[in-house]
Amino acid sequence: MSKNDHQTIIVGGGMSGLTAAAYLSKAGHNVLLLEKNKECGGLLNSFQREGFTFDAGARSILNSGIIQPMLAELGIELELLESPVSIGIENDIINLVSETTLDDYRRLLERLYPESVNDIDKIISKIEGIIRDMAILYGIDNPNFKDMSDRAYLKELLPWLGKFIFTLFRMGRKNEPIESFLARLTSNQSLIDIIAQHFFKKTPTFFALGYFYAYTDYMYPRGGTGELPKALVQKIIEWNGNIQTGTEIIGVNPSDKTVKDRDGNSYTFDSLIWSADLKTLYRILDTHDLEEKAPRKILKQKELLLSKRGCDSVYSLFVGVDMPLDAFSSISNGHFFYTPSKKGLGEVHWSELDSLIENFETKSREQILEWLDKYCHLTTYEISIPALRDPTLAPDGKTGLIISMLFEYDLIKKVKEANWYDEFRIEVENRMMESLSNSIYPGLKEKVLFRLSSTPISIASIAGTSEGAIVGWSYLSTVPVVHQLRKIGSSVKTPIPNVYQAGQWAYSPAGIPTAILTGWYAAKKAMKTRN
Ligand SMILES: Cc1cc2nc3c(=O)[nH]c(=O)nc-3n(C[C@H](O)[C@H](O)[C@H](O)COP(=O)(O)OP(=O)(O)OC[C@H]3O[C@@H](n4cnc5c(N)ncnc54)[C@H](O)[C@@H]3O)c2cc1C
Image (cartoon, rainbow, N blue to C red; front, side, top):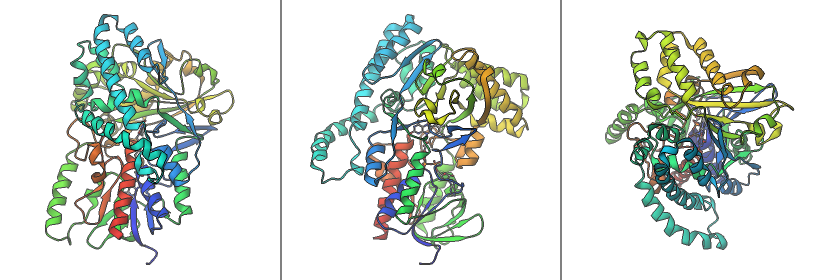
């Protein structure tokens, strides 16, 4: 084989591509991973600024019965620290601990909405059922990453399988969007919003409410979340896998089995694993020389995918503050979901936002900023404090905060088209700081040493994800990929000969665990193709 010929080429060095590359190189395959950025990690990475470490992607990692067994199987030693979660609304904050999570959450809601005590009871009992199912789903190490000759594990696995099948069945019946599910249990719109606005719009109920289990299953790699992809990179290199960064693929030709990069270099493969945005794959695919049937199927798939949108995006503010860690540890854990007002977003993030985007050209800047005022006051913030998990991640006596909120890509895109992007960013940053300084962190804005932000547009351009999506496809319309867990193994197939797909665009609902699982399945398929 020449330098550019490989058994398997993987495009995309996020968690899915890295998982596929790790398993293929471990099995002795000649694998080449091509990543457009200078570093791998994609939507899971950390960066340093003025002595602080920040996580630019996921703020902590869900074990989900996958991360720990995968690391053990690959022989990766990565210290995973506990990453407990807190939830706060106005001045009321609870720290989540597995045994008491739901009772505390119930009491929090009852204190805030005493008029809806009976409805809260109904909601909590539904969450209880989902937590029981999640405990089955995630309560055992995933068999894909275990040695099947381990008798102790088999003893655990066999009785689990029966329960698992029933859980899959129950999961399938809870696919309704979270907003309408809650609306059947209460007419209190603020109560509906305060629960639902933690999640992406129209998130399937099982996935949304399952977070109450997930909140107690989060872990944080010592050194930052970016240590996980870094550890995988090291292993791949150790097993003689090839990783080439700074290489953006702009053409895929399945008939001569080549991909082409932006500098005009070609790479030949036996099989290709596409671990990046799927809309990009279909846009750059050359189907000219394929046999008759394949292009028709491919065209159909292309039309379907291009008609869909990426999931919600986020606006993140990274702040270094001249305040000691205790000032924050006395308020919450290092992973904190905080809503300054119990009123809930209501129509501010539905009809009012839609109308703002649709009529953007007719709106004055004042009108848009008025909407932004309301949004920043009513939204739910995800606040991550890396040094509350690993104290070495901020200089002594100082604290780094990552503050984020869901944010609509189409709005910021219109702002950019109107040449207002840089000023608008400052307006958003100011309002986020204002909102938290006036509520949970009095005086915070006076203590800022530096701040920087990332918008949905930054995410779209850095990670190459459609609409700046952070977890694959939007739930606002039917997702165009496999979305039943029992079929996840087939989610990696494509109608394109010798091409597999993996990652957050291959399966929904997505996130780190399913990016890893699909990467693993794609690697197995690529091994079989070769055999
Ligand atoms: C702020 C934030 C919070 C999150 N929170 C959570 C959470 O709590 N739990 C959870 O499970 N998940 C969370 N996620 C989502 C999770 O991080 C992603 O779903 C997961 O990391 C996706 O991995 P992936 O490999 O599928 O894709 P990506 O990470 O997007 O990797 C794709 C890679 O492909 C590269 N690429 C793209 N196009 C090309 C090209 N043409 N040529 C070469 N390379 C290309 C990109 O640069 C990127 O490195 C969060 C994400 C963000 C941003």
